[in-house]
Length: 277
Image (spheres, rainbow, N blue to C red):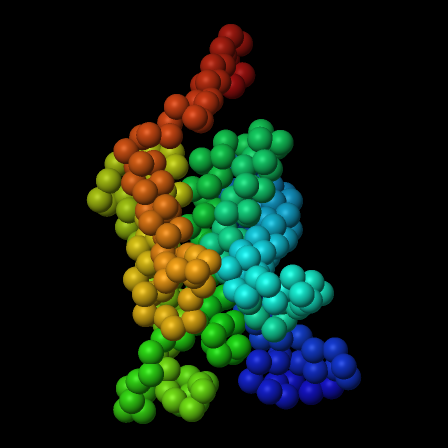
């Protein structure tokens, strides 16, 4: 058994290995679970709600992220060797695909457990930015999600381990993974604690705030990357197309466009006839 036998591997036990990519994703997922669980309990939901949602949403997110990547990255190659679709330890996940499938699972779960979707999304979704921030370090260990070639001096103020890992294909690369990781952390605090100071919050606004923040962040950072996924046969980056969609949905949500699609819960009226309440 050996720890860190290479930069991308956390532990090697014989032929079995656990990759830093997986560790990064799971670390982010459990951070999100902890934060979301605390918020849901504060809202009055049982602690088990977050735990029950966690596994299904995580699995849906991983499946969605992998399928989206496979769909837009050398799809013919994956079709020629279908077993390679399951080799996620080699990298190759597109988080936006995971977000979409995870959201569909979350909506189904909310309907099934009679949880208000927007209220639950306000508690959970902004915390996903923390998972994404941690997940970007999985890209770092796999030497993915990087940008243009930069001079060695660019890394003068960076820790040495980042500089060393950003030497890819014979040149130093811009650490776009780090840009997005930092912006995701800033976004979590801005949405969770700052949004209330700039607008009067209504149900769903934190969820929509996530879509706007992440959409803008990803659109900008994606434009700096040199390893993007593209719509087949074009130079259109799939992540930027989805980012625009996220931004539009978020802005429409803030404007109240979707309120007609979500039923408002009727208030509970209690009659204290005997003075015991």
